Image 1: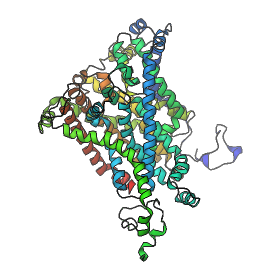
Image 2 (image 1 turned 45 degrees about the vertical axis):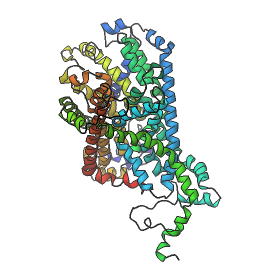
Image 3 (image 1 turned 180 degrees about the vertical axis):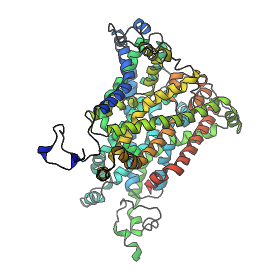
Image 4 (image 1 turned 30 degrees about the vertical axis):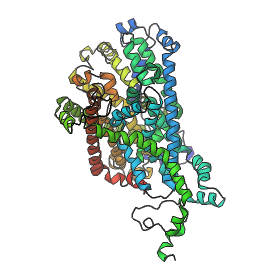
Length: 296
Length: 338
């Protein structure tokens, strides 16, 4: 057993070892481990699969056998949702809100982080602490005055009323992730750029932005996913069907069609798709961003 | 002109040199003459242009509403026109004497404890499991993370359909011959809290696992090798080496979990609606705030609840930082901008 990592002689390597011998605390996996992993994945996915499959059933199927499989498969639930305009309008609204939030957070956050990371000015520490303190203010606490503020600004039922507060609330985590990132850009690069006649802002544009891309993508994805899933703010700000984002839409649909379970399940599973696609595309970034954000 | 002592820090004369660490360090305190000259008007203007927009949005949409919450909390106010009916601490008196609010606070703290107790061990176990060499490891990691990515509304809607009395969960139990276990998952006050915890665990355990996996991968393998050479068994290694080294990650996760539990709103509000949460025994401070504030059109009262919610979270957070996190995050947040 313990001979695993002592002999790198290829000939004696066991057949099962397909990868190169990696120094390792992990032991060779037993079927039991796979079994547990399988159970785990099953438990995590079963509800999702149920929602998706439920959309392919009819209401009478669901009533007579709530835990059964589609038999026969019925696509009416899905086609009703896809051919209707509600779902697509809400996808569009969510897309606009999330994209604008992401763009705003990235632009404002990168600019502020750059100043905080690489300029020495009076009050820099205080400003950083102010932004960092924002982490302590969840949107839940500020939601009522925020609603009043947005109403005073005349932004009720407009996506801008959701976007602006979301940018504000996403700034703390953005700045906390980006400042160390920008600070880590070696001073030598900057000196070299200065010697070559690059202005400070030119340095920002030509060197900082490309070099900070990984961090920017991370904060951008965090902002996008959070905005895509956000519920309490749209709940307060958006009262008209036309302005609903997808989460509000799902809830409204569920209460409107509460007797038509199959259609609700179809709508719900369709509304999962964008997030799932987005997640599978950027899985590494999202996971890395979350863990990086937590580790500071 | 220049004193000797200023020579050393003055070696970098760019206005944007990398900040030296340590707030009180001599390098930082009196800005050398050269440096001051370096940060001329142009650089100052740049700072204003760079930080201005972010600062404005942040102050307007984060700090200002938070401050206003504290202000409105002193008024009896319906939300229209300027608040005029100043009632002092009256709102707070009502909140603190309202048994419904006491229940909500109790639910919140129950959720805090149960989240830690349920998710923590499960997530650590799973992270250890997945940290082994495993085929399809990356696929498994993606799949257990799926519930975390799906929005709360979808999760809430889906689960509330499945957990209805004649829903899929009870149907499945019947099929498996365990009809005796059928429950009113959502409406029975004895069970509703556990149902909520089940959903919370399902939704958020993947996040904890991913965090812990990242923490595990930061542990140098040499330590395990050394221990293995010294004859330590797998479990000894996990208990004596891995877990202590995973400590900082666990403590940060616990912090996030606690704060999240105190401010829980979405899932409860979606699954139990506006009215049933209190009777089902799952109401939280945040749902109480929305139900008794906005939905009841008493905005002053809602804001006072927000302040109480914030203060409770703040106290818990500060205590946690003071007694648990101190050694991990020494200056991590506040010191970053020095």
